[in-house]
Image (cartoon, rainbow, N blue to C red; front, top):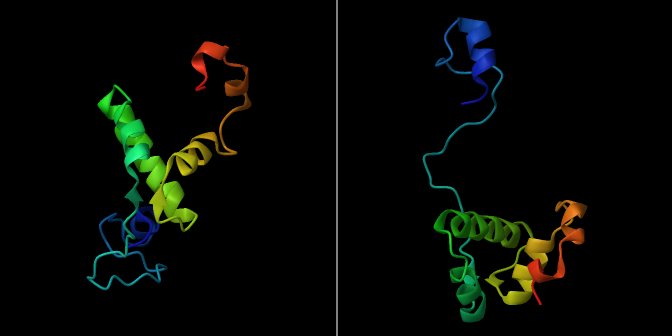
Length: 101
């Protein structure tokens, strides 16, 4: 595991083991907590017409829920996750017809 650059620098082979990496794989699957969706939030997600964007929104909201220890995505959680502090302030200036009522 580890950085391929250090492996290349040490052995001139990027596929070698990184000598400075302390990670040791256990062979066990990563513990990914399941995030559930309530029916209203799931219906709202399904209204996104483009599958690629719907998939990205779902991934982002589930990551948001996991990072905040939220086991169930509701409309309120969806709104919080989509508003987020990281969103550009330019979205605040959208015309009213583009904003969700």
